[in-house]
Each structure stands twice: as structure tokens, then as C-alpha cells.
Length: 478
Image 1 (cartoon, rainbow, N blue to C red):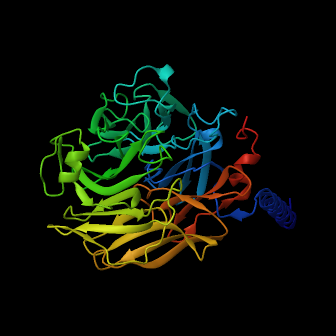
Image 2: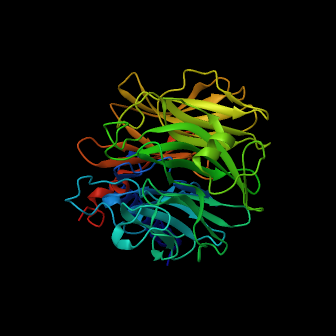
Image 3: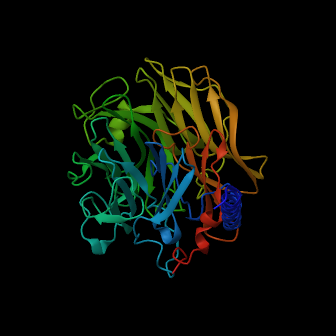
């Protein structure tokens, strides 16, 4: 065979390969959809919240996210920051709630998932509870309402595609909050029933294979002078070293029919409190390092753990963090009686402990809205907030302080949408700069939300064909 013929054949092969590559690339481009800001469109109801947390964890180059999806079932997605690859959403379990079309309140919203990754790499989800039903048996630490608290675990380490449910936590739980300590111990905090119940924790020392029995740390009890009971709403997080920190407000749980307020049971909360739990010694202390008897009662809370007395003003959703010295910063929404509205005219207030007393921020410009707090140093603090701008623009932004919290200014806007309402998660555990917080934007005329993963560069984008979960027959409501 002549050299000229061999050269011609080689050129022909190269040409064919080139054409095939171009066809393949063109086909890939056709199959590839438009990039959108959201990663899923099947967020359901209030798909994420501050109180059920963390909703996301960054681990070994990947961010894992959990949220309430179709029919109130928990869904999980992951994003690889190196390869830019999304996986999921995969359904991690089946909630007892969200399935009854005859129920007056179709979407309960109390069983949103909290997510944790244990030291063996297995992913854990706590979800689905709002106190259990009377048919579930006697609740020794409170009363009943609806749903069943469940614990799901990935079948394989760092694999969100398949899950199993373990029967090893109390079914009466709601508002699940996970904390993992440096030694790998797992603490699951939750309210052990409906409003008139103790807040408890269950501890696991074997990566969530087993959990010890519930231990009460906030006590509910009947009031003698009015028709109501003491109740609580805490936010629990990891402090320094072996500490777990708790910021909380007080809910006066009035009877449905009572002489004090003809509206009956309303979301009335007051005051702001703070304490910490040393998991090594098993001791609970206040900010002055004084020991506390557990479970904490309203009387002892007022005497030993009070940050601020809000008087007749109402509160909603406390958050907390500590600086390197262990001095806490706490925030809470405070405002007048707002009836059934959760945020209403409340504005965020910030307090910090200076070693001697609680100091309130001088800043009066922090907006109405929910968010989370990050204390970077004794002087540098950031608050991530959802709020409304000019009454018609929904916004997710970061407000920074460089003077220890005396003043805050808006420094970074992550997302803005006109005529949109957002729900926001707590900060992702150990966040990557590109993925700090999870947000759900309501789709008008539906119960669904578009879900966003936000970081310093705004939303992480995804192919619209992958993000359109509701167009997948396997994820449609049934």
C-alpha cells in the first residue's frame, strides 16, 4: 500500500471521528436544557425553616441538602463543587402527614427534615413528626397532635439514592434539631409532643444505630393562675469544644377557650433566654457559669437564663452563636401582638454577652424577617436574612457588623425577586462559600416552591430539565 493511500485513509478516519464528535456534542447540547437558578421545583409548603436544622451539610467537597417535598415527604439533593454535578432529589422517607385530602390544614409543615452525616459517612434524616396521635399510645412527656417522628439513614455512606427507616427514636417528636460533637456523638433535640410537652434530647454514641431514652431539658407545666400552660421554642446549636448552646423564648400556651384572651390558643411568645450544655460533664449552665437544675422551669428560666424581658411584645425564632471565647450572640424577632401572623411587624434584635452583662445592638435598621447568625470573631458578625424590600421585592441578604454587633449594614445580596415570598433555612453546617443557605420561593397559585442553594456568588445553577422535578412522573403527587 502506497504512503499516499495510507495518508488518505488516516485523514478520512480523522474526519469521521471529528464529525462523530461534533454530532455527539451537538446532540448533548440539544439534550442539555437552559440553566436555571433553582435546583428543584417540588419544595412543598414551608419547605425549609430555621427551627428544623441543619437542613444542609458540606462534607468532603459535596453539599448535601434536605427539604420538605411533595406530600410533605423528605427529599435530598447533593452538589459536587469540583465537578459541578447535581444528584437527586431522592425521596428519603414517607411522612404520615400531607396525605389526607380531607384534613382542614392540608400542609402541616412541622415535620421538615433535619440532616446529619455521622463519622462513618452515613447520612441521617429526622422528619415527619408533629407530636404523634393518641392511637400511638400514651405520651409520657406531653400531649399528642399529628404525624410520627421518623429517622431515615442512607443505605450506603455518602449515597443519597437509597434509604432505610430505623425505629430507634421517639415517634412523638417534632421540630427535630441535630448536633454532632467532635467525638462523633450525635444529639437529636426535639419537642416530645404537641405544644404541651417537654423539650428533650436523645443521644447516640454509635453513629445513630441506637439512641438513649429521651432526656427532658425544658419543662412544660400547668399554670395555676390562668388557663394556660408553660411551653417553649428553643434553637439548639454547637458551641465551642464540648458545649451545646440553646437560645429560646417562652410560649404561653393558652386554652382554646379562656378568660384571658377570647382568641383562645394563639402563637403568643415572650422574652429571650440563653443557656449551655456541657456534653462532657453533663452539666447545664447559664451564661454566668452557674449550674441549672434540669428540666428547666419557667421560674428558674426567668431568674437564671433571661437575656431580655420583652414585656407585652411578642417574639419569634431565636438564633445563637458564640465567639472564640465562648461569649454568645443571640437574635430574635420582637414586635407587638400580631395575632395569627408569624413575623408581622416584628424586627430582628441582636444581643451579646460582654462577660458581665447582655448588651443590645444599637442598630434599628435590621429588617423584619427570619435568618441565621454567624459569629466570625468578637467583633465580626454576620446575619443571613430573608426580608421584604419596598413592600414588593423579596430578598435574601447578609448584614454585617464589624463592631461586635453594635451596628449592622447590608453588605451582600444573594437573591432578589419581585412579588415573591421566601422561606429560609439555617446556615448549612460547615458551609462551602458557594453554598451557605437554602431558600424556597413560592410558586404562585400552588403549594410548591422553587428551591435555591445560595452562596457568595448567588444561586448555584442547574439544568432546567433536572430541576423540573414535578415534570417527572415519579415525583408527582399521587
